[in-house]
Image (tube, rainbow, N blue to C red; front, top):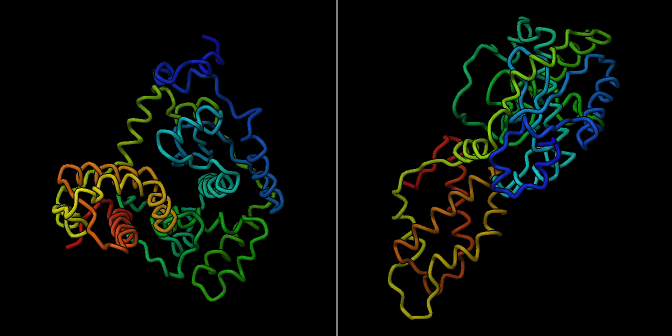
Length: 338
């Protein structure tokens, strides 16, 4: 099979291929000018080290390796479409989001390239990079000790992420971070990054070889395996004890034959509800979709109906779904109200 032949395959056949066999490349794609934009932003700060980028199974910077993994699906329109279809969104799919993510990963790359995480001042400000990554974290949305760059107050998840987020804010063109974070404790971290990067001006660092990066890419699996793993990652198994909540929202005693079933109501409200909850909770649409699908199945099993005179049903339902999703965000589990 020629590298381009996969583009004409039907979806079921495409799912049997691995990204490694598709001949994907960053060169001559929409990714290339965005990476060059990043390098231009670094040059504007007198930083000459350009972290190499490679296609991988997700956004990441390998621990200890100053390089940036970019999701393979961003390298081709058909793979972007497939990601959207299966996962409901494409992380880094817009220019703005791509640049936010790659600036963040560049922060990791610079920390590894110059051993910044080993410096005492770094540890005093951000904490120990050796701290074990938690499965979940409970952010403090109003904390002024951390910058806000990526969603879900990601800087609060780990010292490494705190530094990477601070670096990303510092690097963002046109952002007056001194004004934006005036009065915040996070400003001390930004000033530190500013001083350290001034000291790195004009300094280069060893670049990992293509062989090393290939070992980290993780794209030798079939597409169907990739999606199975990703769906499992976002799909959270939560207890089936939300029946009480559903019976509070709906009723199992229809008064008229014309009463709307809860299943039909949820299906009709599905699209605007998922979008609204995603916007206000900043949770993955796939996660919300999985929750909604389970609720739809459950109300059908319980044979529930919309209560007559429930004028505020949309509001109540949105509040309930948002509560479950926010609990998932903070704890990693969907839980019904107590």
